[in-house]
Each structure stands twice: as C-alpha cells, then as structure tokens.
Image (cartoon, rainbow, N blue to C red; front, top):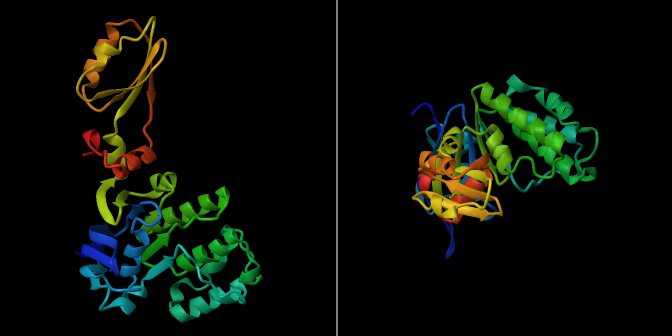
Length: 302
C-alpha cells in the first residue's frame, strides 16, 4: 500500500440526473507519471475534483497517500500541487506577490524561492500584474504555482493549454524532473503527443467510464502493423484475405494492409506475388486512443 499514491474504488459522481463518472477504479503508484486521457466532458476534471475534495462522490471511495479524500482532505492537500483546467487568479496582484503569498500560506520552507527559478525558465515577468497578462502568461502563473513547492503529488489538468511550443517543452521537462525526483504526476490531457512523451501509464476515460489502463510501452509493443506492399503489377488483394488482416487502400500497384495477426502469412503471400517494396507505417497513440474511444479496441489492443 505504501507505494500507492492514488486509489479509487467504484468512484461514481452524478450531477443531479446527469452522470459525471461511473465506477472508476484507478491505481497510481509513487514516482510515475499517469496520463488521464479523454476529451472535454469525459470525466477527467470530475475525477480530479473528488481527489481534491472539491465535492464528495455519489458513491465509491477515493484515497490519496492512503488517506480518505473526503475525511482527510486538508491533510492530503498539503502534499499536492494543483493546476486546474480553468484558472482563477488574483488579477490585481503582481505575479511576484502572488507567489510570495502562496509560499507563505503553504508554510513549507524547503522550496522557498524556487518560484523564481521556475519563472525564469518559463520566461515569466513576475513584476507585472496578472490582469496585464495574456492567456499564455496566466497559464505560466498556474504552472509555477503548481510546481513551486515541489509537492509529493502534482495534479495537472491540461497543463500546456495556451502555451507556445517552447514553453510547452519546458513544462514537459518539469514533469520529467518531477518523476526523476521520485514524485508522482497525475497528468490529465487530450494532447496525445504530450502524454506519449512523458507518461509511464495511461488511463482512457470515455463517457465517464474508464475503458482501459495500459503502460505506454505495452501499447506500442502490441500495436498493429500497417504495411504498404508495392507490386510489379496489379495488387492481388484476394491473396491477403485472411484472419486479422484488413485492406485499407488499394492503388494501381500498391496495397495497404492493417495486420493484427498472421503477419508471417502476409509476408509469405507477398513473396509469391512479385512484391517490389514494403513500406511500414507507425501507429500513433492518437489512433490507439480513437480505437478505444469508438469502441473498436479488439485485436492487439486487448
């Protein structure tokens, strides 16, 4: 139990008659970056708000650091850095004053002044009032506030929203550094390339229900093969009508196949029909996500 940072059991939230999440069962371990995937409205933010004791679940249970989120929320939040998807900041404060106030309220001296280093890395002018900032600079304020106390757990909701590519890269590097220090990140996003770059495992939530949890490397180790076969003459598509093989496209001299099984048989058949070249295509995390999201997660995704 001591290596489990987040655990939910049949976590369910209803907003009146409307379902937020249903029977979500998650385990997030110490020192990992866990990606929580789903489009807006899928239940990502609802799950985070239960973890932070913003509101209680309709039923089920959530614990962080082994403590019940509803009974011991205050104690839990002392060890969490949080970046919400919708920032509410003190507009008339200078960014510098905001960070100093935040630092004082946390009463944790081990990271005093770290916000200055973070602001410099993100190219944030802390002498200006927050009301004068663009959306991107306000997001930088939220990022600094989340990271500045070196919390044991970071809950990040769409952390790179509104940031330019260079700053996005800097934020992802901060996530990697957090993991390297043995701390834990719960990384909610719909930007799949970011999740692929920094996460150890991913959970995919669809319509409020967790439909899959996988290690990122396992997803790619088990991914389907996509091949384009280029023939000397017309492609013999009938030769590849076998289990686990789907024809995606046919050209005058080419045939693109999605191969979930029977790859050796595909290659043997290709060798019998004057194949001139074979092109392989990577399957992205986005395609894997969409397969789960459309309910077509069979084959090599099981």
